[in-house]
Length: 266
Ligand SMILES: [Zn+2]
Image 1 (cartoon, helix red, strand yellow):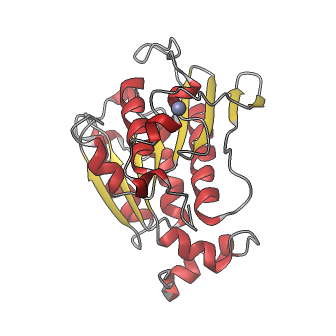
Image 2: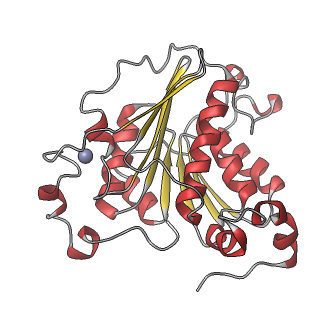
Image 3: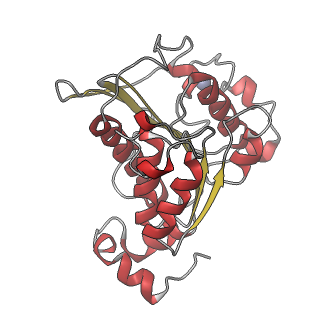
């Protein structure tokens, strides 16, 4: 049974509940959802902001490390006086002030083999905005293991891609990129308006998946060249022998997980 909305929540979300594909039911589905966001930086932090103001009931924010001044051109949850302190706690504070009606858990760690299963099990879906492909691969494999949908968003320079992965139904990240793009994770230039654009689209994917609004990018890879404002949708290949998500691999899962379909609201 979906949670009910308080009078404050009805007031707060009135304009988005006017959307025919969302309505009060969609709002209650958002409230009933826990979203895991990894890599709370320019991409993940901005995506978390739009999930927070949309009323996703609980956010689990995962990001290690301290804020640096050169993060501030894109990490819009941060403030200059926070430089040198853990980013993820500032993100939690900013989002709590924006929307006190939601729960926010801050995990000041990078994604690792030690923490990923607990993090994924505690969420209904994940947004993969992590810094490097090592963390991305760990999250992808855990989402497949536990049958949780994952929004995959990444950018480099003025290019970006976005897709929504539902284990067993769509290609997973390893199907998409058996060999990882040759992206320099430390050295590339980044403009806040670019990471923010991709973040908004990623948050929108999550909201679509949770509420049934519109059509999420299931089995579709959206590639973006933001220098030219060119957007292209491709049908990526699902590798039948994928070492992460192939049926052979899924067959090794406990039966409950192998047959798990997205729940009514995600
Ligand atoms: Zn796969």
